[in-house]
Structure formats: structure tokens, C-alpha cells
Length: 282
Image 1 (cartoon, rainbow, N blue to C red):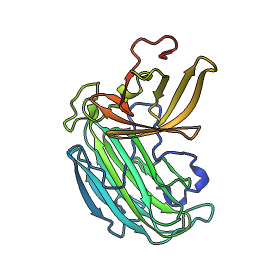
Image 2: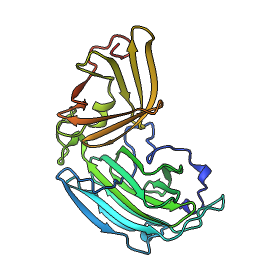
Image 3: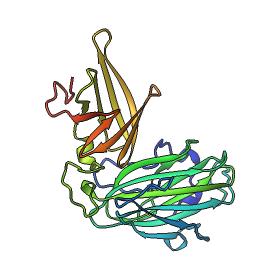
């Protein structure tokens, strides 16, 4: 395993997870604030040292993820540091398993103080899938995972830090039993439904549309008769039932998933089933 010698420059990702081009991907998850699982339950876990790796045997095992409950882990990086070629401080590393059929993991890591905490994600062969080496706080993302074994490492470039790491697992279709169909009923949406086409408000008199992609990126467009269409790149995170999209302009759009559609400020956003051109709603 090479995470002991990963330099900050080795990763240029802005999200917790890197989603490969294939539809079956791997990654970890976590959320803060006691986010609940599908059944509204949260299992709180204390960090147990030693959990420095570098192999699976040296990690703290979280076991198989359960869609009926979220996980909330609290711990401390007792030291930080990076000499330009490797991290030199404490490592907190966790292994977990995604059950048969895969699913979606909403992840978030937060910490106290001003430390520059990084997150790295590994597959079953301990190859780096992705991570966040920026100074962003908290670090959060949502992605689809194939069944299998994974690991996530928390590290600090500079200072010690008390951290909270939570993860919520949802089976395909948004249900705890993997059912629910492609519509993603209830308070969640499966990736295929979310990313299939553009979304547009059903009312309100404003021409807007947004398209989500599997890699956590999105495109937003606004139209008025004076300036025409104004496109913006954006990024989003999905922690069912909440979806937050941040535009490059700095604006944030907060949605809630309700019965397979997106709702923002009381207005339902629907999938564009009859696009005008290039798959767009206008």
C-alpha cells in the first residue's frame, strides 16, 4: 500500500470521491451532525487505536454497511505533517464493506480547529481511488459504490485535529431492500434517474434547468429574453433526502428529494421528458 508516501500534489480532486467512467465504482462515505440512515437510526462508534494501516489488518473495521442506519465515528488525529513527499503525522484508517448489489454512500468529514485535514479513498487492492487534499472544510460527497471492500484514511498536513466522520448507505432505488425502481421514490434518487436528463422547475415562470453527472459535477442554465441563456458550471452533493448544488458564481441551490422529484423553495423540479434540443428543456 502506498498511502504512506502519497504527496499532496499527487491528488487534484475537489471532492471526497473520484467516480471512474464506469458505472460501478468504489468509494467511502461519512457525514457529520448525526445524519441518519434509511430508518432514521445512527450508530455512534469511537475511534480505536492503533488504526494506522497500512494493510487492512491494521485498520479499524466498520464491517458491512447497513442501509437501516447511519454511522457516526468520532476520533482524533494526534499529529499532522507533510514533508512534501509523504504525510508524517498520525493516520486514522477505516475499512468497510459494501454489500451485494452496491448502492450510494453519502459521506462527510468535519473537524475542530484550523488543521488542514485530507481524506484518501482506497479499493480492495489498496489503490487510491480519490480523495480531497484541499483546505475545504468540511469534506463531503455522495457516490455510487459497487459491492466490495474499501478503506478511507484521514490525515492532517499540519496540526492535530478532533474529527467526526459519518456515512449513510442507500441501496439502489432508495429503499432499504434495494427496491423502489428507477424512479427513486421516497426521499432519495438513484444515480441513473438523477443523471438521466435535465431538470426544470414545473412552475414559477422562470426558465432554469440543471443537469447532474455521476462525478459530482453539474451544469446550470438560466434564460431571460434580454441576455439569453446564461450557463454556469456547478458541483453537487447528495445526502438523501437533501441535494445541494453550488454554482461557480457562488450561489447555492438546495433541493429536497420528495417522491422521486426535486423540490426547491416549495417548487417541484421535474425531469425534462420532451427536450427541445441537445437533451435540454429550452
